[in-house]
Structure formats: structure tokens, C-alpha cells
Image (cartoon, rainbow, N blue to C red; front, side, top):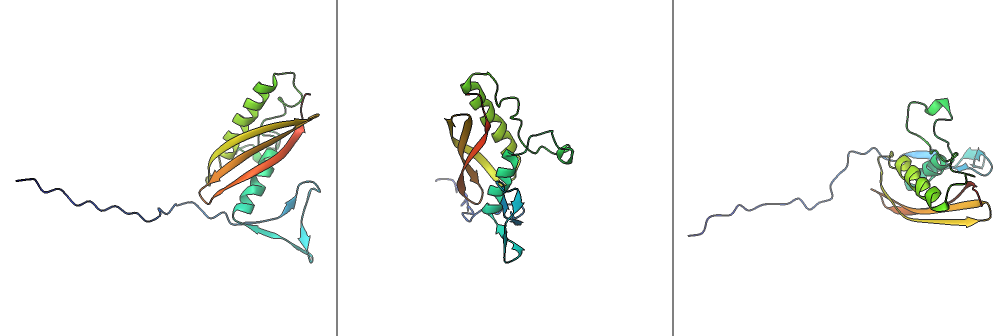
Length: 148
């Protein structure tokens, strides 16, 4: 006689997370340095658009420079790399490490992948894929002048 095997039940429904919603923000034009208005009102953004804007702000904020961020891990430390005479491969590896560490501070971001670096004269462009609990998207952003 064979022993009875317990009938196991598995919950195959989507697991709910305890993450707060991404919420809303207001569209910001980083080139102009101001919020975007339509009919006299700031344009609201929601969900992943809010997260994309947060990422751009992190990339443009030098860590430890502004007192408002002194107690939180916000921004990236890239100034020592930009314009340095270090080998390009080292600079790219450090940018990848620095940006990944900073972006993974956000609870909705799970992974940063598919890195690409391109150089156009004295500018570097970084491109990467952001994987979140809500979906994935690409960031393609120029960053400051670098050594040629």
C-alpha cells in the first residue's frame, strides 16, 4: 500500500507588493531648468513617467554636493571621473557602478541592464534599460563633458 501524499495547493495569482504607488509629479524640462506649463498649469505626470523623471534628476545631481540631500543616498558621484585621464573602460565601469547603486535605492527599480556607452567628441552618452515592478523602459542620456 502506498502512503497518502498531501495535496498541495499553490497560489498562482499575482503576488501583491507592499510598495507605495509611484504617484504623480510635474513634468520638468531639464534643458530649460523649469517646469512645463500648459494653459497656465503645470503638466502632471504619473506612474513610470514619474520614475523616468526621477532617474534623470538623479543622473544630473552630484552626490554630497547639496546639503538638502546630505542624509539620504541621492545622486551620483561622477565629477571625479568626468574629464579625468583615467582609461575609458575604467570610467565606463565606474559610471555603471555608480549609476546602478544610486538607482537601485528606489524601491520600484529591480535591475539596470543592457548598458551602452557612446562618445561624441567631448560628450558621453549612456543608455541602459531599467527593469521595474511595473515594467521596463530605456534611458538614453548625455552626461557632462568627458576626456576625449
